[in-house]
Image (cartoon, rainbow, N blue to C red; front, side, top):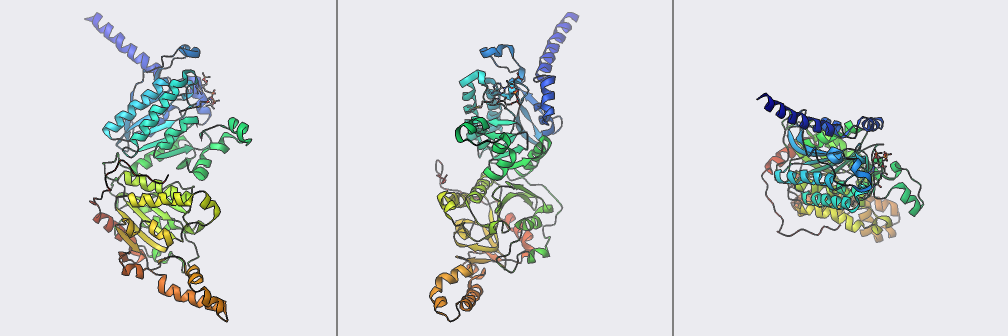
Length: 521
Ligand code: HXC
């Protein structure tokens, strides 16, 4: 009996010994080196991300089986990635966290297989995958096997797209083809200073294009959050990044058959805000900050802005309305007069498609003077890119409500979730102007001859502009055709929106069956 206990205890001890080897990662020195760069270790990151005590690791004892280039002398359990599942805000998630202390977090056969394993499970159970990326890329010693492992992940990222939410946090290097896994996922968060993403690094860039750039200049968090739009968020450090994942998770459902998250709060549904009545300046050329409108109507004035620093002429992000998570798309008159251009169209289209894929209702605030003119825009395909936004709105079947606060001009009127493309409720404030173009432009076209032949052309033009404004720059002609369901007093917007979205709660709308559409990419 005693002998039996001893044998069993030894076996259990062996199990714990192996586990503690795995838990040691690449060793104390490498973990210290990681800390000295201001980075947390792979396991510390997971601890900070998931609800306390909920993480269960799988494949802890996986290691590589390669003998190439001395790898047989560098065998580490986990193979450089910690994988498993746990809860975030009580919601189930699968997580992988690359361990830079083990072979630089480089990805090879087993490392890739582990990520694929949790992705396959996440698809079966319908829960999000959070990837914490910190890797030197393809493991050089394993050659093409590493490339194959990446492709296995890319395929799964693609198949999972629109089925389960995928969030990528870039907390270290992410270079070469490795960037394409995060790129396919729904949201990318980058940590300033310690992370970078590029297809080819500074050395190659210098050789090929003679541009002399640091990693930060070429593909740091700020660059991707503001210039390229690759990153949706740039944050100061690992802790902020992980907190942000938790915040995003609170706004998104577990999968594409789940409902948009609902959580009670004590913000009264009928909270009227007098300030909304006076937010739009009387002068149509004067800007105002559409964020103020969003904050005033949102539950507890809480707004999680996505892509805050990119294409700032449009605003996208999440709010709660009467407790229900809702996606907001809003023209921003304070930046470029809220004009639609290539970048803002792409930004909004991608966000709309995320919301639609995951049953998150869409609220649009509209104040748009039209599409941006110019050779740069035309040569870089404002036609194709603007069409992305149009397509995304047309295709979306979730509840869709628009509030026109001021300008709804030209093609942009159609694009911004107009009634004609299945806007469910289209409201307008009394300050709104629905027209083919602004009064000045319109008068100069249709009354050119009268203006030119007048004794005082300037005075004539002014007179015609005010006549045109009086007649057409308002919501009532559109309302007379039912293009606007109702003209509402701005201060009651929150209540009207919550009631309207409640009415749409059980909306069912479907697109024709097809393999997939052909969005103008
Ligand atoms: C194997 C790697 C590795 C890699 C780093 N290491 N990258 N091992 N394969 N790709 C190892 C190092 O040997 C070292 O091991 C440890 O990780 C830490 O690396 P350091 O260089 O000491 O760290 P640091 O100075 O911080 O530099 C990090 C780095 C650099 C910038 C990422 O390591 C680097 O340039 N690595 C190579 C990057 C690369 O070219 N990868 C392939 C990209 S192409 P020890 O034992 O000393 O701790 C690619 C294609 C994917 O990924 C294609 C998909 C289709």
